[in-house]
Image (cartoon, rainbow, N blue to C red; front, side, top):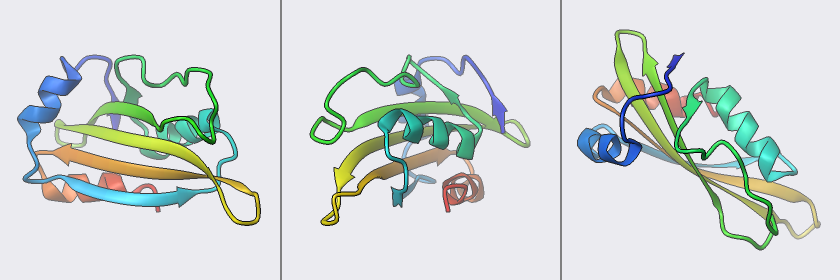
Length: 121
């Protein structure tokens, strides 16, 4: 995956790719802080954060709203890929903090969308 700084306007690109080849998944991650989770997802996927979403604003991580992360990249064969992810912190019954990741991957190739989502496994 090549990181790119400019695929144009993320929201416009997101709408243009549409949902035909969208893959949506939900994961429980073992990060203890939201900043670590964002960094981890960026590392897992090897993509570039868009619109300043790679920086987490200070807030109450456990009770605050989820952080939205917009990512872009170009897969082998010059296939553009966009990701919209929501990361939120939660407490389990044992008081251990964890992270819930909801991710949607869009591209114009269903195999590419699935491959990117599977990078989280």
